[in-house]
Image (cartoon, rainbow, N blue to C red):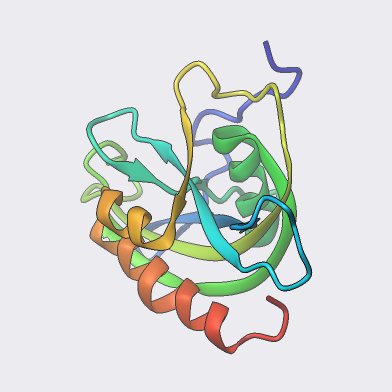
Length: 172
């Protein structure tokens, strides 16, 4: 059982122009391909995905951005709640619009959502997390993640947001 508790409900949820505002991240790590860890060993980037609770395929952690937090705080919170990871939020990947079939409400009757996605360099995997009974973590290479991604907008965030940042940033 986790000491952390996941936030629930819509009382603090942010909306903008009929869109529910969402924050999420693409958690990643470097894994050494050579188990001897020599200086010249090649590293591969792996991303962490979680199972969907509403169907097949994998997702990146994301959820509602609430009134009492910044978008960055919301992204970090979702990574802890859904994937059970902590780390350094490095770069803004982009904003992505999508339609949610499960989150239609009075403020967004069509289920429209706008997700702000970030890159999160994982420093710690928690043994206990709020959603561990419903979420399974999977570390995947980028090509595996692209093949298993449930939503087109998340695939786009990975391929055309995260990967571009990865190739052009000195922070990585």
